[in-house]
Image (cartoon, rainbow, N blue to C red; front, side, top):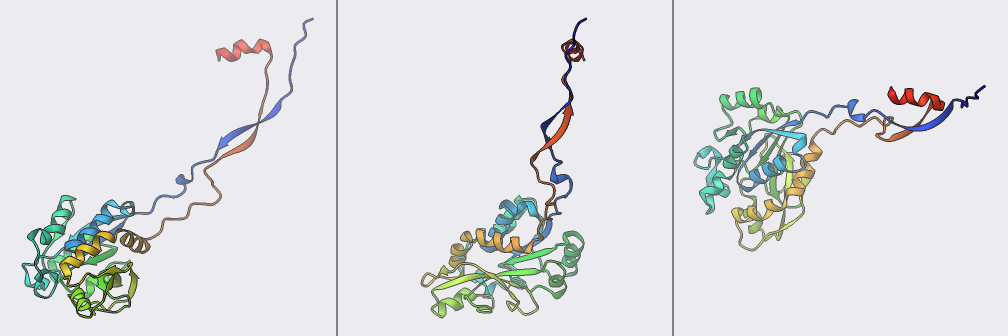
Length: 266
């Protein structure tokens, strides 16, 4: 009589992968952002939001920009009255158009713009950087996350309101300025302080055009930090579902030698 060796069932540790946490939580929708800006300010805010690390958290849905040939942009009292090139005036509209964005260069206090702003753009957040028109109250109140302006100022706020703050600071003999973000209100440059940049040196005798060329190219980190704080944060991932491999007990049985061919053929 032949003797058959058998082995009892044994337990063994194997690795089991837990379900990915991404199945449980969908990424939040992108925030709809409208830009009101021109020259270096409008350009650098647009560039940072389109191509910087915040690009996956927001969508630029429209750009309103200056047309300095029109009196409603107040070119005679703003930076446009200093010597500049036509390319400076077209910097933002050309850039925005090249990115496929809707561009508006007319008067914002019109029924046509109100309709486009509220029906088509529907922004949750508005950012203004070098824009020559006063924003009507219904537009200020529309975005749920607020309407904000970038303004050259002193290190305290409020300071140097108005259309040409750089000229006022040069006259006062100031050696540095900052870029301040404040809420837009019915009072021009009178809204609540939000954030300020690092100080930037003011060279002697410089005008607004020259100072904008100095300040804005170094404001990328400030823009992304300040605007990132305005955006809704992503939902927290569940703490009880780590994406790791865990040990688990499962039974298995070693078969006899005679069973090998059947197992291999299966």
